[in-house]
Length: 89
Image (cartoon, rainbow, N blue to C red):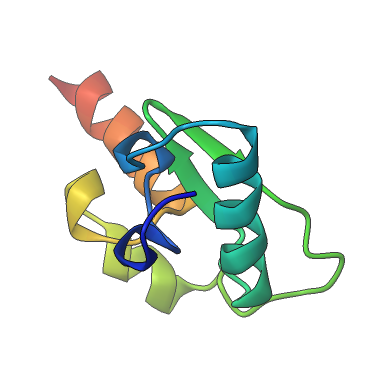
């Protein structure tokens, strides 16, 4: 297992030991904090919370607009803003 400083990372690619147990532990820890989005390198892993979370509103959209992926927590809006910015280049 990874040392405690690697628990609840935004990007699982940063884990010291990347294996099934570490990935599941990270996802379980983040899900327990209602952090349903987690990066795994270039990909975004999403766990269905089976309830509505207050993470899809204009305030959240504005928090992600124009920000780099590394500046904000993993979210669908970070991915879509990056895709939109790349499309405009």
